[in-house]
Image 1 (tube, rainbow, N blue to C red):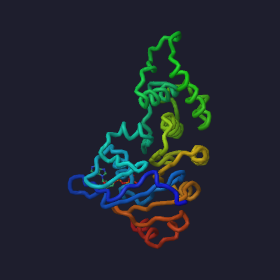
Image 2 (cartoon, rainbow, N blue to C red):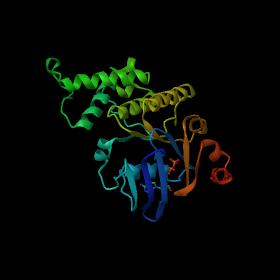
Image 3 (cartoon, helix red, strand yellow):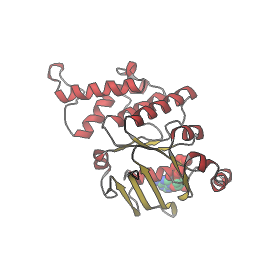
Length: 254
Ligand code: ATP
């Protein structure tokens, strides 16, 4: 049977003042895949992420998630439906512990008020215990368990990126959008981040990944979409895309 697209966006348009940042771009993400989104600097990749998650509203275009249109939903409702994201520069809450960053993500998802920085030890809700168990499991899976009680602000840049991924997993999403998970990360940790993403993909999670590091794209992705100047340039397996003359030209030209 043909594989279902979990996400399908068509005809995305966005201009900022006079600049047409995204011009009739489309993308499809198959259920269970790790799909890459690549392109030269300024191609519109981050803007596409912002349009998919509705952090920025598209001027035009349709976004279907699980077959339902979501382009008019606020970002928190999109997250509740199972699509979460990370940012190019990790946005963690520096003055909270790693664990509290994780618990806050769970609370934001359910809207429940079990989490509080001032909670009384005797009154921990059942939901908080469940969230803590899940947080420990996820932190272990990304090598951050030993840092659970450290301030998030004390983590290295790469560890912050891992925490952002871990936090995205707290909400049991179907699809995670990763914005440059390897940028500014040392080679050893890049290799580990790839292994963690692969691990969660095997657990059934689908990923859409923006990344400039071609080794990462090649080793992780099932399919790759290439943007240039805000529009689709190519789409295919990593090997097909890498040997596509149009793609090579776009990269060399930039
Ligand atoms: P990079 O790989 O360098 O991160 P990108 O492919 O993610 O680039 P975008 O950041 O989406 O590209 O930018 C696409 C174009 O839109 C660029 O010309 C950029 O300057 C412009 N742009 C993006 N966001 C804004 C904004 N908020 N206001 C004005 N112009 C913007």
